Amino acid sequence: MPVQGLVRLRRHLFGRQAVFGTKVPATRAYPFKGVPSVELNWTDPDVDTGSLDPTVAPHRDIPTLSADLTDDQLAYNNIPLRLSGFFGGDVEPTVVSGDALEWLYQPASVTVDPMDAFTYNFGDDVLTDWYQFGDGILESVEFTIPEGLGPVTVSDTWRFGSVASTGSTDMPADPGVPEDLAVDTNPTLVYGKDLSIYISSDPDTLAMNQILDALHMGVIRFTREIDEKRYANGTQSFDVQAYATATRSIEFEFTFAKTDDTVGSGSESDAWMSDQAVDRYVRFSFASLVDADTGEPYSWVTTAPCRYYTRTEGEVGGNTVIVLTGHAFYDPNGLGSGSGAAGVLESTVVCTLTDAELGEMGS
Image 1: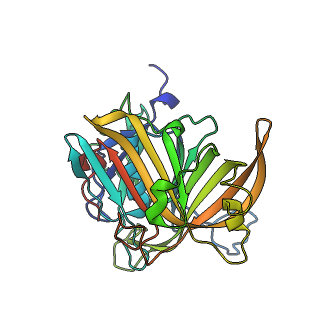
Image 2: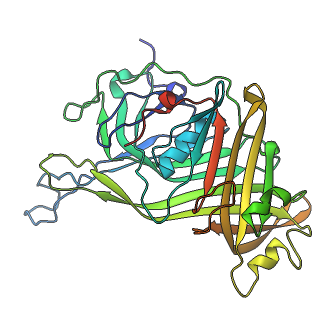
Image 3: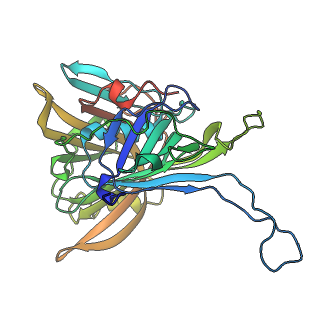
């Protein structure tokens, strides 16, 4: 019998759930690296039993279910998983032209968007040892534009509300796990070389204020604190019954060469060093050389209001650089005439991912 349990035979399968608390068959395979963490929190009682060693059996406590996953080359068709997993909102794509579909994210700040929960199936060639997680949401996601402008890389931290296994008697996975899904073997990738950066004091003038010959690398970082809700409803399980986002942070990190736009009077550094916080507007615009449909290239455009919080010094090769970090903020006046909506961020992805491939509309 051949050796079982090969690392390269691990698979990561996701599907967006229609209802919170109800796991669904996975709808897409993703080329990720990493493994989930299942901590059932078996805990010994703090009691005296006449023995130096544990005597009374431990009890189960609230489990900690998570997965730190990485993606060495972000594909346009894999962006909606991250944006839906973090922002939710029941987003569905609209047709741009032919196979080209647009996913538009405008997360709410003063109201609460519904969360999109995902089922995540993970395992390898040993089919009797697959995990099935339910009610997965992203706690954080970080997109890194690398020095050299190669493919954008991603680090995800997922939180899950339930776990089952094909090898568990008390918590069995649904029949059909794992699904027969394969990764896209030749996806269209998001490259740093295809990025244009725009920064302005007015969202309506962003298109006229491209920052040239300055950005070496950058990071788009989404993080939040999540409250897990469990109620005594007689369910006889530790499964999460609802999530609440306690706080949310959207950050942009720019590693800039020293140019007139980035240092000196009237520059981005000058905005950081001001006596009063200066409102800026930023736009990351990726446009691929590959068309999602004839005349409609794959693209990803993110626009947000931004205020600078920190500056640090660095170097790239033999040159000094500055690293400015800004935080997005809620702007009740909107993100420009093209948006027409108040908010903290607008992100638009043009790709070929269908709603069925991501999964049914969220909960």
